[in-house]
Image (cartoon, rainbow, N blue to C red; front, side, top):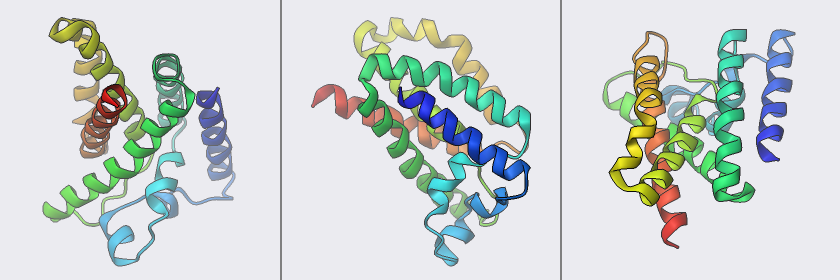
Amino acid sequence: MFTYLLILINALVFLMIRTNKLDANKMAVSYYSFSVCKEYHRLLTSAFAHEELYHFLMNMLSLYNLGSICEDAFGSFRMLLIYFVSLLAGKYLAILIRHGNHDDYTLSLGASGPISGLFGAYLLLVMYHYGLQGLTYFVRPIISMVLISIMPGIDGTSHICCLSIGMLVAYLLIIL
């Protein structure tokens, strides 16, 4: 239910970017835009901005798969909670880490951060139910995520931070 809504919002924003009604670079987030320019909204808008068709399609396919799985596993509202907490806290943590590495101007955009949060949440849920043996189901997806995250031009810091926050939120949802 909410997975489809997130995909629809992403699609509308993508169309607006492609028709020059929105500027993806003004939606993306960096340490400079967030901390110096005080454009706090960019934490949120960055996750809905995609410039290339391939980037958009791959993220929406991932969102469709992981969003649907997480909605079934956690419920719709909890899936949204995981998505947005992963997005906001994960992206914030990533820009702080990049600042520590003197990388204040690199722009981050796309839905892959909060999608990584959903992946982390589902990973933790499977490990909770099946122990470390549950990790065997995730060998290929984890390898794929690592390989994608280390590619040039990909914000791997955001992927890892959002994944970690997604795991933390899932843990809290499971124990509470």
